Image 1 (cartoon, rainbow, N blue to C red):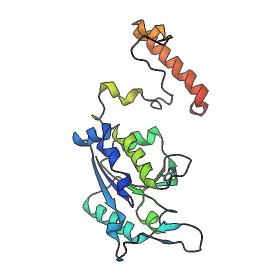
Image 2: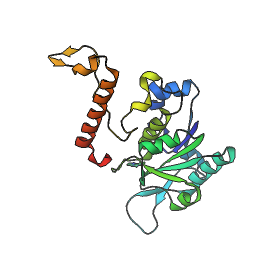
Image 3: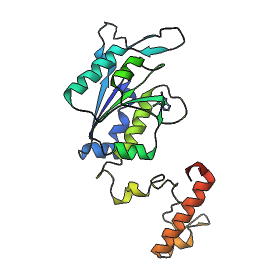
Image 4: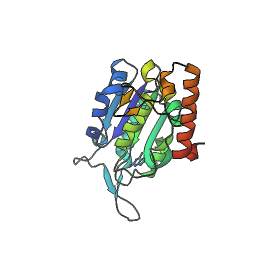
Length: 223
Ligand code: 6GU
């Protein structure tokens, strides 16, 4: 997989790709991540990327030209499966969407900033618009990190058995059951007996019961 991240603050983005699972996925060759600064695609000598909005109103808008130039350049180099604009008014990200995108080859993530981007580049280039939740961030960069992490960990071969994505919360539309590790008793708090019984089937049943109970309590909307 190749991900091209187009934004105005690449420095906000880079370090999460330099540690842990995302770094390992890059080092093992499962994914390439490239960063593009919209300021490098400006024509004016001040490298200005934003301007006031027509019709008035507070907040700046990212101009069409630098975005069009950057996306046009990338699209001339390879075919993209999706050109995704990260915006609070997009479709809300869920596990199903991450699963689908994890099987794709080439993705562009365009990060909005300020009030957003000129509608004309949305119409011209964007194939999908994604929000990471119903709250507002100061820019799409943080959302691009979230989306990248959600997708990259699902690429076949990135996680091993111990970190398998199959048992994650949401993979079966339920939250995950409680988990424990050694010691068996900590400050008087004991690990549930069943988990130490060795009965595989009973343990599986207990986990399913717990997952259902917790989901009903915390996220009844999922059931
Ligand atoms: Cl993708 N961008 C911004 N700026 N805020 C958000 C978001 C995206 N998703 C939720 N809030």
